[in-house]
Image 1 (cartoon, helix red, strand yellow):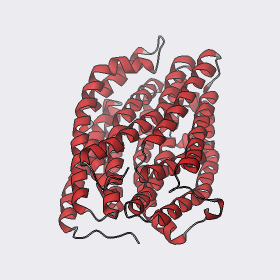
Image 2 (cartoon, rainbow, N blue to C red):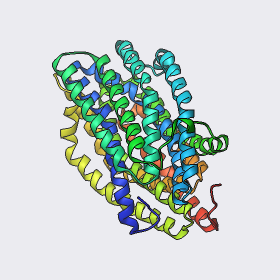
Image 3 (cartoon, rainbow, N blue to C red):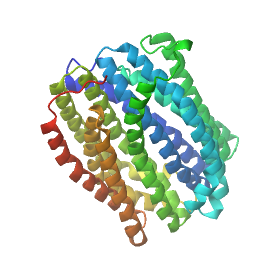
Length: 446
C-alpha cells in the first residue's frame, strides 16, 4: 500500500487495522497460556506466567523497537523509490539480528534464576517460573526474525500478511495448549514449548512468503551481508527506539517487584488484569505505528502537508478507540476475570482484578494521545524525544507505584500509570508544537 496518495483517514485505518489485529493475536499467545495455566494447573502457575511477562516484554519490545527503527528507514526508501537501499537495509537487519538475538537468548537463559530472585519472586513459584522463562528465551531468535520480516512487509504497505500468519500460529498455540495441558494434563513446561513453536511457525511463514511473493524484499544468498553505513543508520534509529520500547517493560519489571510483596493472590490478580491492559492498549500502540509508517513514507516523498494531516487523522482514530475500549472494559470486566482463574480460592483474585480494571478503563485516554504523538516523531526520525518522554513516564510511574502500593495495593498501579502518562503529555504536547513550528524542511535519508 502506497500511503503517499489517496484518502488519508481511509489509508491510515486500512493500514493500521491489520497491525492492531496482528498484535492482538500475538498477545493471545500469553493470554491463552495464562488462562489455561490458571484453570488447569492452578494459581501458582498463573502467577508464574505473570512473572515471566515483564521479562519477556523487555525482550520483545526491545526487539520490535530495533525493527521499527529499521522500518522507518525502509518506509522512507520505499516512499522515495530507492528499492536497492530497501533491500540492503533488510539484509543488514537480518544478518545483524542472527548474532544479536542468539546472544540475547544465551544470556537470558543463564541469567533467569538470579534475575527472578532479584524480582522477589515467592519461593513457592520460583522453580516453575525459572523453567518457564528459560524455555521462552530459546525462542528469542525466532521472535526477532518474525519482527524483522513482518516490519519489512509493513514498510512496503503490507500489514495484512503478517496478521494472517499470526492468526495461524496463535490458533496452533491455543489448540496445542488445550489438548496437551487441558486434556492430557501436562504442566507449565508444555505451555512454554507451544509458545516457542508458534513463534517458529510465524517466522517461517513470513520468510517463505517473501521469498515467493514479494520481489522487492527478496534477497538472494549472495546479498546477505551487512552494509556498514546502513547498519549505523539502523542502529541510530533502532537502538533509541529499542530503548524507548524497553523502558515500559523495565518499568513493569520494577512494578512487579512491588506487587510481589503483596502475596500470591495479589500477584495472580495483577497478572490477569495486566493481560486485559495489554489487549486494551495494543490498538492504541499499533495506530501509532500506522502513523509512523504513514509519516515516514510521506517524508520520503517530501510531502510535509500530508504528514501533518495523517497525524491529525491518527489522533481522531485514537480518541474514537478510547471511547469504545473504556465502555467495553467497564461492561465486561466481571466476565473477563473469571476466564483466568477458577476454584474455591479464586473469588478474592477476581474481585481485586475487577477493581483494578474499573480504574484503568478511564485512564486509557492518556496513552491514546502519547502513543500517537510518538508515532509522529518516529516517522520524522526524531527518536530522542520518544525515548525521553517514555523515560519520564516510566520513572514517574515506578516512583509513584512504590510510594502508593503499601497503602492501596494493586489499585495504586492504576493511579501511578495515570500520573506518569500525564507527565508525559506535559512534555510531548508543547514540544510537538515547537517542533512543528521549527520544522522548515524535509531532510532526506541518504
